[in-house]
Amino acid sequence: MTVTVSEALQRRISTRAFLDTPVGEDTVRDLLDTARRAASGGNLQPWHVHVVAGEARRRVIDAVRERLEAAPFEDESEFGAYPPRLWDPYRTRRFELGEQMYEILGIPREDKAGRLNQVLRNFDFFGAPVGLFFSLDARMNPNQWGHLGMFIMAFMLAAEEKGLATCAQEAWMTRHKTVAATLGLPEEQRIWCGMALGQADPDAPVNTLRAQRVPVNEFAVFEGF
Ligand SMILES: Cc1cc2nc3c(=O)[nH]c(=O)nc-3n(C[C@H](O)[C@H](O)[C@H](O)COP(=O)(O)O)c2cc1C
Image (cartoon, rainbow, N blue to C red; front, top):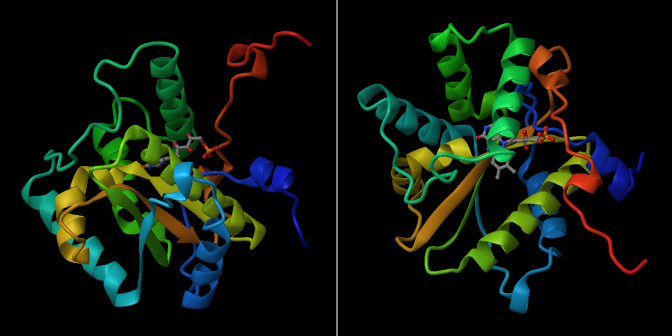
């Protein structure tokens, strides 16, 4: 069954529990082949992608787990995922997403260990058989980071069309040095985010989460119609 772009946009969610059903290299190549049609200013196509499955996936997961055990709160990212002291309305949106997710998972706010464990699930790609790392040259401007984002969205929609689930994961950014060393990324490359790719676990409650969106009138201004 073919899905329209609008349907793919409606259906896509961040999936946080996967089946271990393998996804073949050809499939991932197809998705990248579609996503590379994403627009980018000056047609720079600033994206770089590292795809891991099998042993390679295991190596990244193990390397990060070792670092997490040695230095649980270390942050290896070269820039924060969020501005410090995030302000409203963004702060509240982020807070509400967390509350919604932990409610579904039945992890109350006092259960710090339970909530931390859920965060740590990022570092095994939530069980997905394929992991991707999206990076770009550190010398690029915010402009090109935006274009990498458009590529990532194109990839997620292409995956949706094929009945595959994804979760973009900035969590990996906090382990940038470890991941980059394990993958052997060139020195100038910066990982923006990782991604889990696979078949969604249809029985996992966390996958029922539908993150809210603010209505159009809250972010768009129309003039001259
Ligand atoms: C670049 C990017 C990074 C993200 N990083 C994470 C992450 O590390 N862990 C996670 O569970 N979700 C992550 N998300 C998912 C967001 O929380 C999610 O997109 C948002 O709450 C909207 O929900 P939806 O994708 O289900 O519509 C990320 C999303 C994007 C676009």
